[in-house]
Length: 90
Image 1 (cartoon, rainbow, N blue to C red):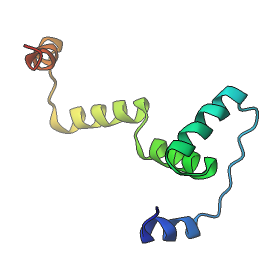
Image 2: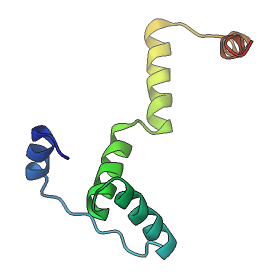
Image 3: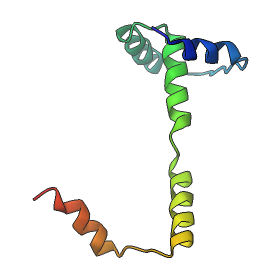
Image 4: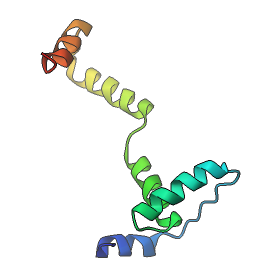
């Protein structure tokens, strides 16, 4: 089920992407996931690609970290990071 915003966004999309040489097993897994979600394969893959594009990739994350460090001058030592990570495991 799509919201009105999703429907409007789909009408604005005029770009097609063709992916060749997808392994049959990969296509089968994606088709099964689409079926479980009540979507066509195209709808499912479009949603997955959109979600992927909305998340920063590792290089973008490191760029953000570097920019924030430059802007604030703040640096955390590794032991402080590990301590914070492990605090909720106790």
